[in-house]
Length: 444
Image 1: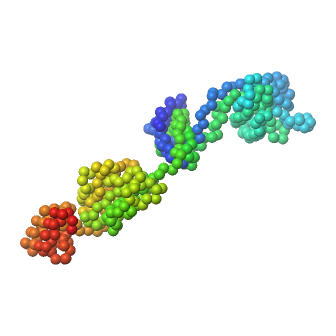
Image 2: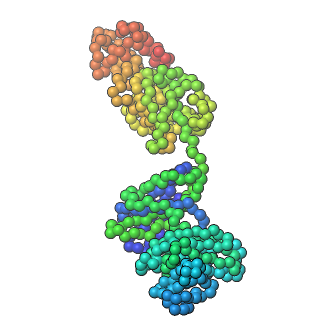
Image 3: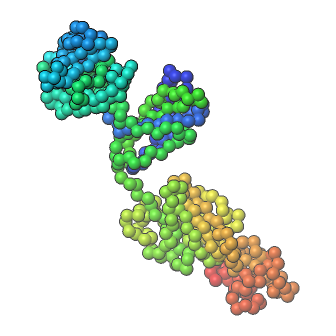
């Protein structure tokens, strides 16, 4: 899901085209930003925002009746006990005149509300340490919650109350409450209340980040912000909302079937390839003798099938080919497309025996077969002229070597080992006959 970011009011440009690829317990976030080289990212569980909150009443530290630093009266629906004010500060005292009384500030819920949600917002005095301390908020329906303020901080309490009930602010501090510069009550959940839910990842130096530790099948939202060269921050881009996967995806196993590692074609045999989730590729190193074939099958790990014909998606597959895929020298190490259609894939025919490293990507649909470095090439029986193909030309070359009595001499275009077609270690006319019979029957 790609979202184009909004343009911010700050000079630093906002990242664009954010994209999220969710997993089960993680996700990969990417974005586009050619103008900046550092970014902040934040994410949190997503909750659909409630209806726009309604500000019912707010009060500043100068809105009172009475003399400064003496008992004052707050305008209704605000009220309180032992409330004082002065120098743009409102506060209250505990144990005033040593009489054991406790101070508080209250807000009486107006008519028309039953078991409704409200938000009490408080900002403390910022000029000095008078704004530091503890405040506690409660209602008859909501248990008391205490928050410690540093000077100039803002905090939100979400509470439940009905008409006529009071939202009460008290302090557990010994004598004076922290000084307050602003109070407000909203009907609903006020803006900024969920700010503490964000998890921040700062000073990223790449336009890609993997968020780990997420919950299964859970909605999250994520945003990115650019950091300019001068340290200024852009606005946050528009959030992208995504849902993590609800179960671990089943990864198909891939088996190499056929004449590899001294195996034969069989429904219950096969060499399992190793899957790397980072590269999404399967690899295996196998030994294959000359003139042998092998193919591929897939299965789902949980079905317990170790190869065979009862396959789960994607079934049998192989290199895309109209006929048998001949593993000639020029095809080694090259990337070839795969096919999963019966009429369009082929098994692999090995011309020169040896150890081969096979790499497959089902995600990107390709296969690479390479010769293992240091693996000694094996002789392809019948390939007398060493061109990688057994055909009538090899018969001609063998006959010429017999006529010239050079059958024991290895050259760039003659292989005594390949000419020994009947494997009796003597090269003569019998080998010519065996080679011709192979060309006619395709079987040694």
